[in-house]
Length: 216
Ligand SMILES: [Zn+2]
Image (cartoon, rainbow, N blue to C red):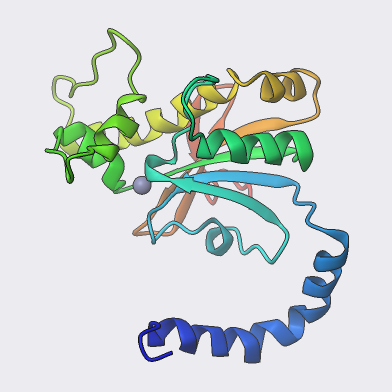
C-alpha cells in the first residue's frame, strides 16, 4: 500500500467514517436492485468539474461519462472503440434514463487546445483527433472581429455543448426516446471560478444563470 496515493487512502477513510454510515443502506439497496439513475451526464475529464459534486448527487443518482471537452461523437458504426457510444447505449437503451445533461465548463483545456491548435502531445495526437470531430467539414472556427479571447473561448466552450446535443440526436435510440417524449436532452455550463451553473434555455438557445433566473 506504500505506493498507493496517501490522499486517496485518507479520502477513503473519511468516506468510510463519515459518508458510508449515512448511506450504507442505500449502497446495499443499490447492490441488490441495481442502479436506476434518471439522469445521464456527459461531462469533461477536468478535475474541477465533477458532476456528482456540482449536483450534490449520491450513489446511484447519476450515470456519468466523462471525456475531453464533454463531446459526443456523431453516430457511426464503423471503427472499433466507441466509449461514449457504448455508455450512451447502456444509459439510454438499458437504464432508460429520462434526462441527458451535456455539461460544458469554463477554462476547458480541450477547447483551449483546439483553439490554440496546439502541437500533438504525443505521436498519436489523440486530443487533436478527438477534438477534430468538433468541426464539421468546411466549418471554420475563428475569433470574430472585436471578440476578446475570453469571449471567443467561452463561445466555443458553449458551442461544444450545442454540438454534443446535435450529435446525440444522430443516435437512433436517442432520437426515438426524445421524439417519443420519454427523454429530454439538456445543455449546461459550469463557471469554475464562481461555481456558477448556466442552463441552456431551449427556446432562446441561450445559457441562463440558474441563480439569476430563480431556478433554484
Ligand atoms: Zn474541459
